[in-house]
Image (cartoon, rainbow, N blue to C red; front, side, top):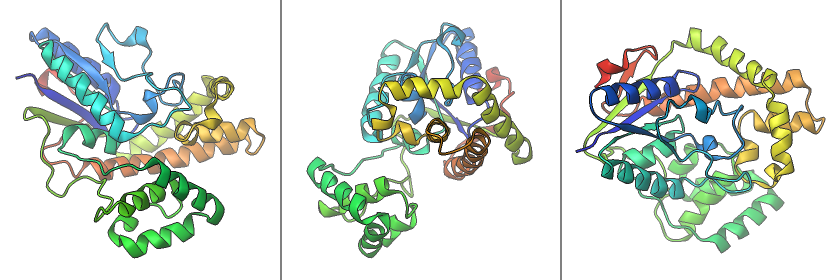
Length: 299
């Protein structure tokens, strides 16, 4: 049986480099391996600098899947991603290779690794709720959600209109709860699954993340966002809210100085890294490693 590997962890902790080293180590031992993306923002074409996407020329000839599959006007839906990621993994297995799932988007990773079923959708109902939240603001609908499903409400930001709408949409269809969270006792989708977490102490990680953000601006993030805006970035539902991209858009509009855009992106990135660690540390059987670990020792 082919193995499913998952390399997870906070942003900026060396997941990408370790995935390449692991693929090489597996190949050296006689088992080819291919990489599957589990970073929601790396699904988007053209969103490269702000997502630290590995250029194709640096992928060492290792097949990579589910990168650059969405336009910036499309919605990155985790239920759709689950189907496509699992299909890609099954095709990798059929070729006699191991699959390496790599990324820090917790819900996306969980949707692949675990027996994780998504609640139903109703586009018309969602449109009505979105119109309502646009008119009344998220607070009114959040209060409604809290009254109907306090456990689901407690897990989300009261200002996150998109998640509030989705939860109310599910409840309106007769579901007892929104349910899109890691199950209390998760069951693996693929029996031979090995989960590796890259860990960097926070005292080291914070300055690394701050410098990484500053380097993105030096590398031309503003120009990248300007090009994406020309192809419809602001019409998207997910891409324009990505950390760094939202701030660069605000800078382009004159709503934020460059210094403020960078500082806000740094603060949000640090906060996101904390949430990622909190999410992944719940995974049973996860093996935390230094990102510089000898990949051959992981086999």
